[in-house]
Length: 306
Image (cartoon, rainbow, N blue to C red):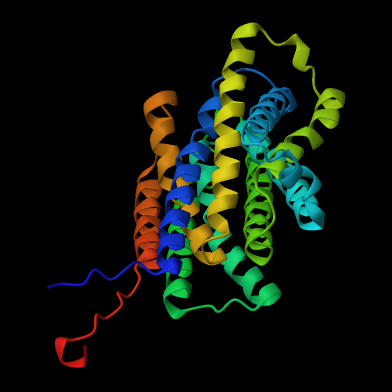
């Protein structure tokens, strides 16, 4: 008779965290498509994405009866997550207008190292040799891609190094914000995910109104951005919930799946053709992700020891 060994709670949490982060990766990888799919300026996109993202998230919170938990119980960590998320979003969306989807995505690959180092310095999270190797390999992949695209490849940044460099700098700000966000949720796992995500969108509405002209957009563009808001809300919540269940470095490493996925979507939908360097770099990053997510299996007790 064979006894069934129940799954360890940590293993279950890890599997759920892995699933949630992967869902967020797929959702986030569509950001370039939505941003470049409309002719609107960055702050106009930020406004309508924020309106719908916050609206969808608040409705979801209310439907689950968790308004008090997500807003009143947010605490300082939730407020910090909202501010960091807002800054990252503003940088993220604007970067797409200045350079290619591939270029923004590859710079995001820096976030594993940033998250792992931040978690080590802030909360004393151990840096394993496997994770360090994976981070270095991901950085090597990003370096290969950057080396093959020294000027930006987007219609705006092509041939204009200043604009492309600005897009790179904003993408780096986004990577820093996302890494810090992951560490916040790892350090304070009881911090609600949905409330801070909704607040981060609301925080961007006043500056977007002052710096943009969102009400000048046509209804077609607003409809596209409403879908963007829904997808972004889903991505934000699943990322935050997944980050609670995984080490910060691993969460960030899984998130770098966006690096090869986003350019692939841009190729099929926007006809942005990736360079050979992008393909090589993306392959290295995929290998790095496989290395980081490979866990040693627990050894089952032998019949002699049972």
